[in-house]
Structure formats: C-alpha cells, structure tokens
Amino acid sequence: MTQLSQSNSETFAAASLAAKSGTEVRLEGVTKDFGLAKPAVDDITLRIEPGEFMTLLGPSGSGKTTTLNLIAGFEVLTKGQVLLNGQDVGALPPHKRNLGMLFQNYALFPHMSVYDNVAYPLRERKTAKDEIQRRVGEVLELVQLVGRDKHLPKQLSGGQQQRVALARAIVFNPKVLLLDEPLGALDRNLRGALQLEIRRIHREVGSTFVFVTHDQDEAMNLSDRIALFNEGEIEQVGAPEELYARPETLFTAKFLGDSNVFHLGKVSPIDNAVAWEDERWAVDANTVSPKVASDRGSALVVRPEGVSVSKNRSEVPPDANAVKATILDIEYLGSYRTLVLALGDARLNGRARIDAQSSDFSLGEEVVAWWRPYRQRLVAE
Ligand SMILES: Nc1ncnc2c1ncn2[C@@H]1O[C@H](COP(=O)(O)OP(=O)(O)O)[C@@H](O)[C@H]1O
Ligand SMILES: [Mg+2]
Image 1 (cartoon, rainbow, N blue to C red):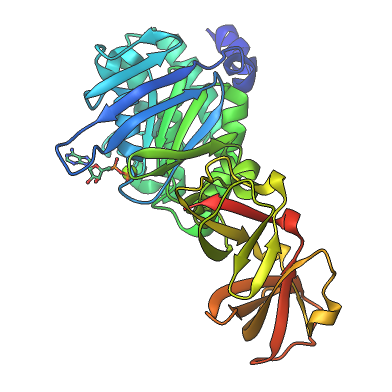
Image 2: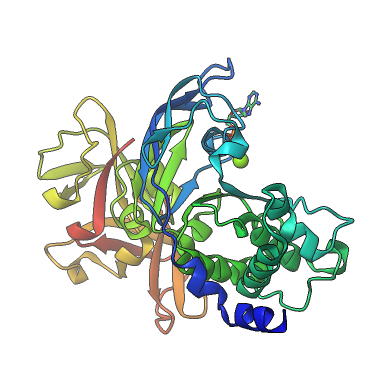
C-alpha cells in the first residue's frame, strides 16, 4: 500500500492528463426557439477544433448560455445538429455526453469536504477507490489546492471554491469542458489570476474548452478563437487579433475595443475613396470588409492607436486621411495619454492615443486628427 501510493504520487498530474486530446465540437444549423420574436439561437454553424480554447462572447441575452446548454444537452434543439467527434448527440441525455461543466455559482456541496466534492463525479461513475484517490490528488495539484482536501467549501475563499469546482469539472477527464462565465462572481484581481490558471490548465489537460463570457478583455486574454454572438447569431469568428484588427461589421469593431466611427451610408465596396462631410478619404482595398455591399450601410472605423493629432493641416502627411477635431479632454493613463476629441462639424465623439510624454495640447484646442489608410477599416453596419 505504501509503495502503491508512493508510485502514485510520482505520477505528476500534467503528465497523465496531457495524454488525452480534445474532441471536435461541431454545431450545424443549431437553432433554439423559445417562441420569442426571434429564436434565442438562430441557425448557428461553428466548428470547434479538438483541444481548442473557443470563447462564445457577446452581450447579455445574445444566446451564449443557450448554445452551451444545447451542447450539454440541458436544452432540446429546435433545429440543427450537435456533433461530438462527428457523432450526432442530439438524442443523448447530458450525462451520456460526458462533458465537464463549470458555472458562475460554484454549486459545491456545502456539507462535503473538498475531497468529497471533487471525488463526486468519479463515485457516480463507480470508479475504484484507489483510482479515485489518485485522480483527486492529481487534479487538486493541478488547481493548486494540495492540503485543502479536508476543508469544507465555506472555509475557502471564493477563488479557492471556484478552483474546487474546476477540479470537480475536470476530474473525470472530460474531452470537452463547458464554462459559463465561471469568473463572473470574482473581483477583478482574482479574475486575472484565475484566467492565467485556466489557460495553464487548458494547455496541460488538452481538452476542448468552450468558454462563455460577456467580457471582451477576458475573451481576448484566454481564447484561441472567439465566436462573437449578436442576437442569437454569430457575427464573426476568429483569433482575438483578427477580430480586433479586421472587424467585418461595426458591431464587432465596437464590441472589441474603442473605435472612431464615421457613418458613411451606402458605399460601393470597390470605390477607392469615400466622402464624409467636406473630407475625402482614400480607401485601401485590403481594409474593406467582405461584408461591405452597396445595398447596405457602411462605416469607416479607426482605432485610437491609429490616430495621430497635429496642430494644422500643413503638418499632416499627404497620404494620410484627416478630419478637423476639437480636444475635449486629455486622459493620462500612465503609459500613454488619450485625447478625447469632437470630430468634424458633427462633433462626433472620438479618441486618439498619444505618447504619455507629449503635453503640447490643451483643452478646447482646434487640431487635425489623421491616420494612414491602412489603419482604418471599412465595415458593414
Ligand atoms: N428557458 C428559457 N425560456 C424562454 N426564454 C429563454 C430561456 N432561456 C433563455 N431565454 C431567452 O433567450 C435569449 C438568450 O438567452 P441566453 O442564452 O441566456 O443569453 P446569454 O447567455 O448570451 O446572456 C434571451 O432573450 C433569453 O431571455
Ligand atoms: Mg448567459
């Protein structure tokens, strides 16, 4: 017995867990209609790769949780298919899908020790006692709660309780882990720390993670790819950098980060210039979203870090696009300053990020904001 537990303790958690690889999750025309004006999930098609960290991001009510519940089997599909490694699981109840789940409210059993909470899914699966001991030991190591196994949940902090819940969700080696706003109840610092932990655990266990959040920074931090939800539909799917740098629609541009937005109305996607007020701006074909169409409104967006500010037009490079602006406010943010601007005659709200050292602007000053055409995007509204 001594020898057995010794050799078990040598089995480092990560080594045995990393042997698995994740499952492909495929959604084909997935629809859930609760009889509201519009289906909560409206004809979604998405392929999540084995071992991928995919985040479903979007505002409240956009259908993220419903999508997760359809994958888990807690909701019945109105239409479409959910496939795990190619197998249609539409008819399988949740416990037969063998997925791990983690929600915002830790939902630990309050009267059970940490050990018993984590062991619970293994006992349900009639796992042998020494195997339970081994696995619980491994996952408690993975979530850095070694030595807390006899504690009751109420003796732990919120962050520690969520780690216990995470340990319980992964203890039976699920090939897919579904996480619904698991850090939503934690304060900001703790959230940052647990984001790092979740990333590390994802790398070590190799399962497919489907993570729901409405927090853009959290999504950018964690994900291999983000599926951005808008009213039950997927607006755009891509790596965080892709969504930030190459938004296809105004919704995506505005949801991820700040933008200066100029509404243009209908434009032809092949024009090499657009007009706004008295300005005429060059358009670089590489920066036109594939969703821009002449029968649909469009907007030109520029990130604050793409915008420069000069005192007058003569200082603006000839190949730049420019607009007159008034400085409304100057925000000092440590490593940089943000100028809050009123743009054009319309006095649109805008922002430019400038060097923290530059201090030669004052409130109320009339200036020129400018950017190079490659820093802008022409997106669909
Ligand atoms: N069981 C339900 N019955 C009726 N409507 C629901 C139900 N669950 C969710 N909804 C509605 O579906 C839409 C999407 O909800 P949800 O998936 O929870 O969004 P999210 O997780 O993105 O905040 C919302 O309008 C919500 O009110
Ligand atoms: Mg939700």
